[in-house]
Image (cartoon, rainbow, N blue to C red; front, side, top):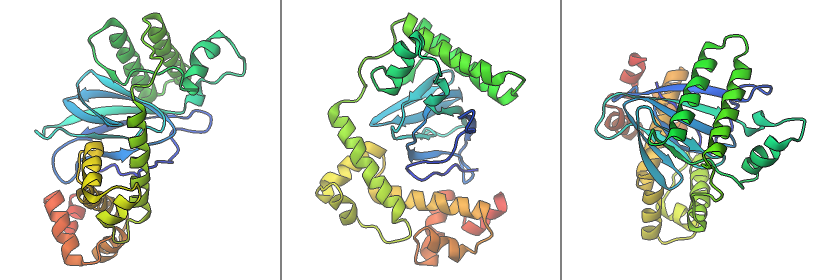
Length: 295
């Protein structure tokens, strides 16, 4: 199974009254592998690796996160999750929620000192959470409790989950682990805004021919400068990223529709059927038709 998103994700996580959802994901080698392309969303996100190792890209940083460790992803920050190159099965669980979940009708000290500063980007939660300190271990245990509570959904689980999120904030405050400044420099932030512009353009023009010149002119940069910039920010060359994205979307359509192979190829930007089948086979080790039979 494959997880696929447009770059600027706008799907609803949870419900209006409880805007939080939990997503267990298995990363396995082969054509049915699940992975998460680079994307961003308004919600914040905790990720807990539950088996093996997961490569997590957050902004311009790349983390190798092992079982029992996690990351926190701030609102609107581009991120991606992938299996390590050496292969082997890995698993992680993502908790995606709107910070409005912590809003209160009564203005109190907790709101004033911690919740509002997080909303206003005056306080920051560290990105990488290892088991190296007491406070990190406590936070990771609360993340695990959130996952268990959500998946079990016993009576009162909503209260428990909100409580665990507040406990995470309490631990950060107690151990003075909140950061006063973002981990990103102004230069990094500018690069992320440029990357978002490029990825949004690719999404909007996926059915059409996209050239390096088209992408480089958006920023603007020379072709060579743009290729180096894109590789630094996504770990992929621009055209390889586009091909991978098209193949991933084709796999989603193969799984979720009864469209013909030709229709799917055209939908994701392949004008030539033979080239689509050849490229799909190189990526997934099977043809589009064979991929359907594996589902």
